[in-house]
Amino acid sequence: MTDLTVGLIGTGLMGLPMAQRLLASGVESLLVYNRTPGKLATLQDLGAAIAPSAAAVLQACDVVLLMVSDRPALDAVLLTESARSALDQCIVVQMGTIAPRESRELAVAVADHGGDYLEAPVLGSIPQAKEGTLQIMVGGSPDLFELCLPLLQRLGTPEWIGDVGAAATLKLALNQLIASLTTAFATSLSLVQQQGVDEDIFMDILRQSALYAPTFDKKLSRMVDRRFDQPNFPTKHLLKDTRLFLQAANAGGIRTDSLEGIQHLLEDACATGLAESDYSALIAAIAPSLTPDPLS
Image (cartoon, rainbow, N blue to C red; front, top):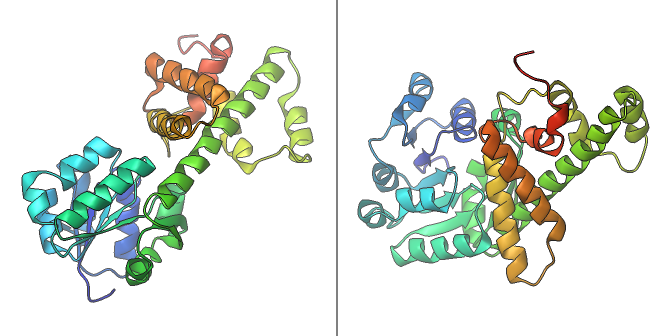
């Protein structure tokens, strides 16, 4: 992989630390593009080359990693007229969270224009991206996976899951747990607070039980303090992933009554100005009467 040129499109919350990690791990020539050019100055200072367009990255690089928000954003960088003509002989590694159906459609579109496609969504957030410890789920050709493995190992631990769509499915299943576990914890914590029970006692007992999940402690202080700034994963993105899960599950006849309720809570949180905030802001939608008045 060291003799292949590498590009990265999308330098937002996750794309930026991933690009920094690639540079720090010894990728000597990294070509990057972002729709908001101001986000590229840091990477340029670290030695990355800046491309004028997504098509320029696809044209110049053997392997291009994509970390953009959703399917429309992917279409905007992959399927414009100039981008389609640049896909020939390019390996596209799609690392964001999209629906399995969407991933399969992209694989066909890339192949139709002479390129190769892997899906490689990740589990982990900004700290893991910086450390190179992301869990990377890969769907696509096993041979293509082996070819890209040395590059992906710079970012974390890659694991081949199956054909295109398999890794996207697994990613949605895991993000559904993020939504459900966070909501369950926030609901119990809200009752404890509302009834005046000591939060420390609640947590001490919970930690000793089979009910405990480490994410509870990761979100505890944010929920107690109602401090949702500097997110690793914004509420709006969890809402997007929840909707994708619901679409896929409903199409397969899976009942999603409880998750539909969580979707409504996420929508309420976004509607009250918390779309860009950390998804622990769910608690503000669950128990708004317990949220401190910022003017008090």
